[in-house]
Length: 328
Image (cartoon, rainbow, N blue to C red; front, side, top):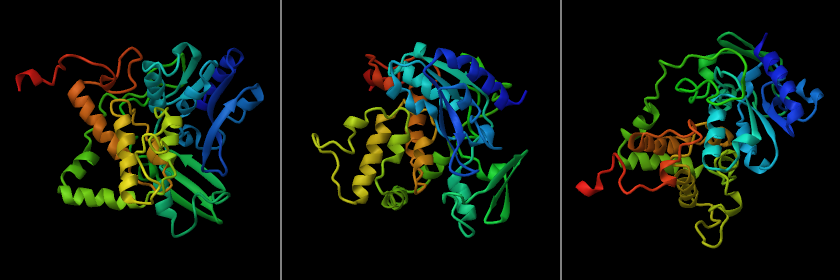
């Protein structure tokens, strides 16, 4: 049985016992997927519509869980999505018993920024109706737009997070569809961070200054983050204390991103929704990955793997195992 059919069967089995099941359906054209809230059996027929299947299921549905607290929710998740669910539960932001998790193995998702750059000379990827047909076959993606067909290798347009993903399968689930993917030989060498660190401090600052100058402060990165749950009290909007001005300055834009990054230190699961949602394609995930690596090296902790583990920056110990301040 195809993965989509297995998932549909599981959703139908779960549906009577929950308020809704959140998965993915068709977006505004053949290329884009969108979150789908399934409340009735007929809604399930729209699940993972189109040929992309899980390859188009880019959004992280864990985003909606804190807002639906108190309701029984079914959630269809790939590996990085499931880590967000685990982290929300570990921080008591949701109750594990209120979520029915339907997991599946992920083979990677499309990076629409990469695709947009490759097709910029031909048409606008995000224009509604721009893409009329998509076919994913093996290692190639073919799409039709403006009467022309374009073909790309899967690796060329896959999100950067996918080849280094150590948890392609849902790390926690109540039912699991498909066959688990082996990830024993996958390692994250943080080469993207190392490339930045090889720059001089001046060049690195110029890099971020140039990137942040493009920011329009739409806060899509914040709104798409499943662990960024204090939106009503966000530093980007707060006037007491007044952290940021409304000036269109690179300084204020960078300040917001640094605050956002620090709030996610030891909590970010690397789902990449912040960077995916950015309309300008600013590599804000680099900031989160840099602190994520530091937390992993210093505290032996990776977010979203254990519902019972507490994030190290949300706890206190007299002396950390790798921080021997008493020996200084």
